[in-house]
Length: 272
Image 1 (cartoon, rainbow, N blue to C red):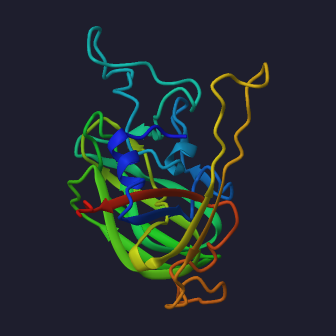
Image 2 (image 1 turned 180 degrees about the vertical axis):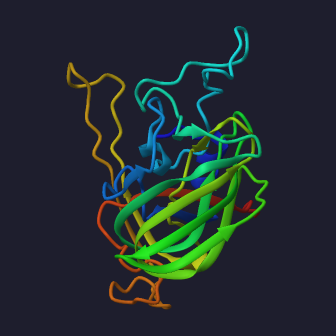
C-alpha cells in the first residue's frame, strides 16, 4: 500500500465527510499492447527504434556522436541496450548544411486497428533538436486516410489534435529537414497513448481489494500481493459500447488495461 499522511487518515475516518474518486485508464499502454512494431528507412547502429513507442519523451542524456564530441563535453555514451537509457531512433545519415536530408528519412509504426485523434512527434530535448519539415501519413490497411504536412516547425514536442479517425493500422513519419546541420534525425516518441481520466458523475463505483503485508513476511522469499480493482463507469453517452464506431474508444475496450485510482475527501467539523 502507498503511505498516506495522518491528516488524510483523519479526514477519511471523519464522521461527516464526502469522498471523491478519480480514475485514469490507459487504453493503449505500450507495455501491454504488444502489437506495435517500429521500423525505419535507415537506422544508426546505436539507436533503438522501439523506444519511439514506449511513452517516454525525455532523452537519457546528450549522447556522444563521432565528429560532434570533444573531451570534457557533457556527453554520455550511447546505450548498447534499450533498457539502459532512453535514446529513441536515430537516422544513419546526417542533415546537410541547410538542415535538409539528401533523401527523406522515415519512421513507420504498425499496430492493430485503433482510433487516432492526436498526432505527436518528439525530438531530442537534451540537445534541443527537432524536425522542421515533415509529413505524417495515416493508413487503414493500405489506404491513406489522413496526411499531415508540417513546415517550419520550431517545437521539440510537436502535437496536434485531429478529427477522430478509426481503424488506423499504420503511421509513417517522413522527415525532410532537421533543425541543425550535420546532425542525425532523432525521434524519441511517435505513438500517442490513448488515456482518459474520469471524475465525478462519470464514476458509479470503485471497489478495491488491496492486500497488506504483515510487518514480518510470512514466507522466506517474501510475500505476493494480488490486488484487485472493479470499477463501474457511466455509459449514458454509449461511448463504452463495444460496437459503437463513433466512440473514441472503439476497438480499445479490452482486458488488462492499466488503471490508476485515487480517493480524495472533503470533511466538515461537527459542532454541538
